[in-house]
Length: 435
Image (cartoon, rainbow, N blue to C red; front, side, top):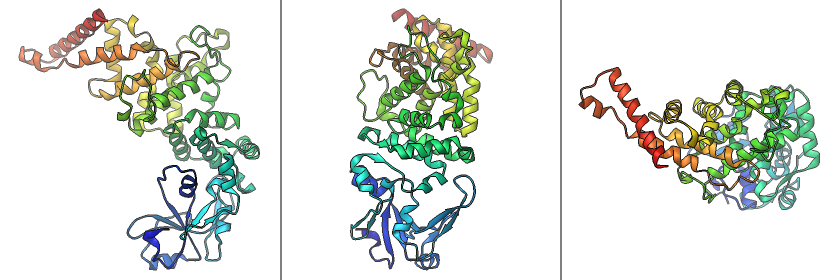
């Protein structure tokens, strides 16, 4: 029952993800409501506020919940915006559900609790199948990314994509339709997958259906590029990157009890999760630039990858804070792996690059991404990574140095700066001696 809305003179259905997740016994985050048999004029007369640009969506006057009028759509142009919408009172619930992407998303619940399931979505939920509703699936290229995202989200439950749906995703990817997607929509789907716990599935599916080479060719190029077996028993750079992303998810998951963690996972927000996991995804992009005759060595791939990280961030309009961490991890991840061999002066330079003096929390995110890189190798998933704690200890010691004591000594200007730098260096040296 929709208790807050039972008195509205409207035929209302709960639709989409809320019904799907209720049936899966998963937490429901958003409730979307569908109104059948009404007009926009009626909705406005009841106090609803119109907010939809491409189709009629209204906000409830008190709860601000979204109510959309039932509609049908017809493809008129290219891309995910090339549709004309028909939203008149004669559109039925079955017609509205037919335009949806997957059968598991084409289930509705009436206000009395009755389930409306004309396209066998409940059967596909039981069988753990993600299947398109109709051939109209091919009309919207964004659905390639959406299905990959759902496959990643429900991977832990055993969901797979139906073969015929995979085929349609490949056909869309091989057409030019993906090029019509905006940067914002691509990043929206990508970032939503990155904060779920099996983001590697999202990227693997995009690769399998030929979408990744259209959307992010530099990442796609990593598959088939070998690494030295001594350091990378998994060999393939693409497989390694997916393993690193998986490890980054484990290290930043609120539900993972990982003994190797150096920071409290409960303190990691979704924004930090996103930044860490995106950095993990980008850390080895430079290997795609290594000349084949130099394989499996990739000397200098860290700095070489910076331009590719910048390119990806520009293409997807990645927020600047996330880009900064990705660049730092790309350039300095080998520094962390070799932390015990670094000079104290090099460690201080690393801290300067990370800017731990003004952004102390950034070190946690940086080290977590680097730790994911270390664990994202065949057989090294559970191996201790003391480098992270060692650099944390160096940072804590050097961060205790402030300008106050030098000002009290009567130093001024550049003399204060030089004194701080020397004191930080000595602090790191002391940690090195004790380690």
